[in-house]
Every structure is written in C-alpha cells, then in structure tokens.
Image (cartoon, rainbow, N blue to C red; front, side):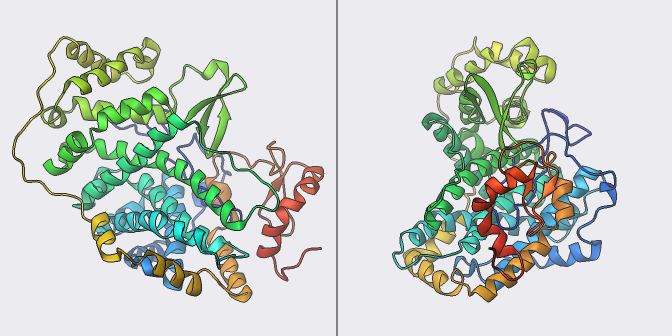
Length: 481
C-alpha cells in the first residue's frame, strides 16, 4: 500500500487547501493547491476557539429538503464554513487537526455525508424547477447561491479531513453512499471531457439573474467533481478496512478502476489554449511552463494513487474480476507509465509490473457468486420521501426562503461578512490576490466593500460597472452613485 506523505502539500498526494467564496461574488469550490501564500503570523491565526468548534460540531444535524434555505439551515451553513476554514488553517499551519478529531468523537461524519447527498438531490430536483417558475424573477439570487454552494462547502471539509484514516472509518455505513456520490461526480466529469472543457465564467450585462446562477452552478459542478476525486482517493487509502459490500460496490458495481483509466486518458483538468498547456488548479486555469510539463499534476497523482490502491492491495485484487473489457482498459495505462512519471511516484513501478503480468494472462469469466450485500440508502430514501413534491417544495422555498426583504438581505450580508473574515480568507488563499479586471497581481482593495482587489486605479474604474452591484449590497447605506 502506498504510504502517505508526512507533509500534506506533497506534490502528488496533496490535500486541498480550500478557501471560502467571497462574500457577494459567487465563488466555487477550489481544487487541490500548491503551498498557500500567507503572512508570517499565520500560525497564530485562529477563527474558532476550541470550545466554539466543539459546540458547532455538536450542533450539526441533517435538514429535510423542504428546510433548505431556512434560517436554521443558513446558520448551519455558516457554521460549516467556519469549521471548513478552521480545518484548513490547522492543516496548513501544522497545528494538529481538532476539527477532524471533533467530527470523529461526536460521530458527525455520517451527518456531513447525509447533508452532502441531500443538497445534491436539491440541486437536481428542486433547482431546475425554480429556474422554470415564471413568477420568480429575483433581484438578488445570493440566498439560492448559498444553497448551491453548500455542496462545495461540505465536500471541501470532507476532503480536508478524509486525509485521516479514522475519519473514513467513522463514516460507518454512509461510506457506501459517499462512494456512490463520488462515482456520480466522476461519471459526469468523464462525460464532460467528451463534450469539451467546462464553460468560462463570463461577465456580461443584462444577463437574467437565474441564467447567471445556472452558469455559476455548472462551473461549481466541475470543481466539486475534482474535489470528489480527491475524496475517493482517500477512501481507497483505507481499502484494507472497508466492508466487503463497499469493496464490491467500488469494484463490481461501479468498476472504478476502468472509470479512473478513462479520466486519466482524457484528463478533463488539462486543456490547450492557443497552443499552450493549461491545468485547472487553485480554482482557475493556469498556464504550465514548458519546463514543468513533464511534472505530474496533483489531480493526475490522485488518480494514479487510487488506481494503485484498487489494483494492488490484496483485499481489492481478490475481489476484482479482470474481464476482457477491464483488461483492455487497464493495459492502456502502460503508455502513461514512463520513467519520468515513475521517478516522481516510485510506487508506480509495482503497478507497471502488475500490468506486464496482466498482459500475459487470460481474462476471467464474470463471477456468479450469490452475495448478500448492503446497498446505499440515503439517495433512495430521500427520493422516496419527497417523490412528487418537487414543484411544491420549490414554490414553498420561493415564498419563504428565497424572496427576502431588503432589510433581511442586509442583515444576512452582515452575517456573511462576519463569517468570511478577510484575514482568514487571505490566509487560506492559494496565492497572492489577483486584479479583478486584468488578472495581474494586486495590492489594492476596493475601499468601500473591501471585497475586490485591483492592481491600479485604472483597472478599478474599468471594472466598476461590473463590481457596482456587489459593492452596493455589502456596504452600509446601499446606494452607490
């Protein structure tokens, strides 16, 4: 079994350092990152006191789909964001990981998995209905955006804490539901690679708010899928302690090794733009210098380690049926296993030897053993309980959750500003801030809302028409000339 690196920012087995979204600019889940940029006093930076974190973790609970967007649900979303950012700060500063320990101690990992799948179902069943309601023309879509972003918040937190084996074990029966969740996301990611790269976020005037929200949701879905890839890789690190039902789900029902080969083959997190190689990292597409193009990306590393775990661990090998199709898919890996790649991840030499032996053996016939196994229940239970209620749910939430008064919206904006403290956001940022207009390294911030960065006054003036709406909502008085 591949050993874990001592440092979480190891190049190929990196754990994500995930930042929260900006307060009023719709952000998305962030992907695995290189070492974070932070100030010299980051080790002393603390968002939550130990007692506060304990209270927040104890209070985590599952909400019915009907209550998503309610006052209680919003409070839990803010609490999860705080726990998420504190977990990142602890991991980055190597201060121990009390959030992970609290989640295990209080048995809250299954709660997080249930909430993750619940918001996934809301996005698939309720959000499309909301978008089609003719009488719903909101002036501000941020309350809905927060529900969409909830999935990203939870998968970010799970990715941070699942680095530890005891967290995977504490998920208990819900680990199978989480495996199904990751499979759904990776299947969508593989399908997206056949349709081309995800759309870029475009800033345009006179775009209907709900249309803009749909675009943001699609962008977020791509990044969430990348986070799910990392979570799945951490689950495969624990393959020796997974139940037989979970192993069967991963290897027989979903055939994850073949899915991972397809992802490695199409590499949806890389693209060519104007002849230049780009990789999706830190929440955006970044150009890879020619001297770095032979270096294994972090996401490629996650796939390779997951494949290593699923193909070479004794428990998985004993239960994986190497059919003719599976053999053909796996042998595609030999083309990728170059000396340069193996130098970066030496364990892959064992995988290369396995593939050489596989090429000489005959495929196995499908196994026909009668096996009684456990099946995931969260998605099916939620669908069964809410079947036929999607439109009624959308109308109820439209009336009670997603049509706040201006006064309520300002109060909520103040709470968001308190949750997303600027010093914490800067500490967990993957790099120095970038100009919102030209993308250059920025050193100046909007003096009114303190939320957007610029490299010079000229860029701020050029960006003002776009930034105006966000700026007016987060600042006192609410009117900008």
